[in-house]
Length: 363
Image (cartoon, rainbow, N blue to C red; front, top):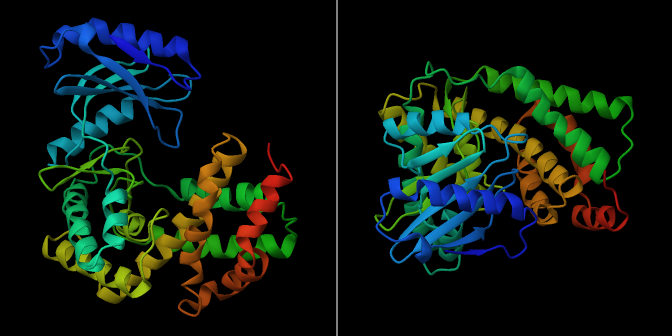
């Protein structure tokens, strides 16, 4: 067995993971001997988890290193069982050592939906191809939303939503941009947060993946999508996962196209007996839920840069906040906040971000 530790900042844990894999290999669905396996660090996500691919001949496994002082793998295992039982395509769990923070999973490949969508964007029939890909995502989302909300999942509480929206104020406005918010600024922000949280809480509450976007969906050769990064699943607003998918922080589409795709999902979910609101109410919920999520995401991207030194996420902030700009004039209760956002944040946003980093606005 060979282990690639290029750019591995934690070689001791990598060695321990390698030893653990050697111990569990006899119980895995593989006839390849240990010495044939090559273990390679692969790109991770925005968490403290790291992922390795163990590959030999025609078989491969995903090894997860989730340090117990930073990550709790129990929710992943619990939601994995729940989703799998509901027909959602998720990695199979072959082995787990919760004390060490190690998991061994089936390998769903590395072709992200995001990659397929970007190829479609540059094709001759981009919207048709993209629509077909999103239909695959709809199929998995319908399975998720059919899961009973009584399956002991935590609630997406008002407290949690408020903590999320506050990431925008603290990490993006104050820490990244260095804005000095006065009492009037804070009042405008709090009033907008109240509107968004109230709208989310009044929605139908269903099983929510909570990070259902193009980089957490893996294209399969059978023309289905595998679902990953689901450990934060909650019972929450019905529109949350759909807006995560269609108003994606990592890829953007014309506003009218997003609306048509959202309505197509609404029709399918209505026919399946999942949602029961009117079309008008559904679109309002979709927009306001998106605003809450995008405020949170801009705060998280800022934190990833400033605290965790993951600077690449900064490039996604302008796209993420552009979805809020699209709401101007649609919802009067957000007019004051959107005017504030336009004057204090959006003007020359990319230059402001570059300036903030060059000045060293870090924690």
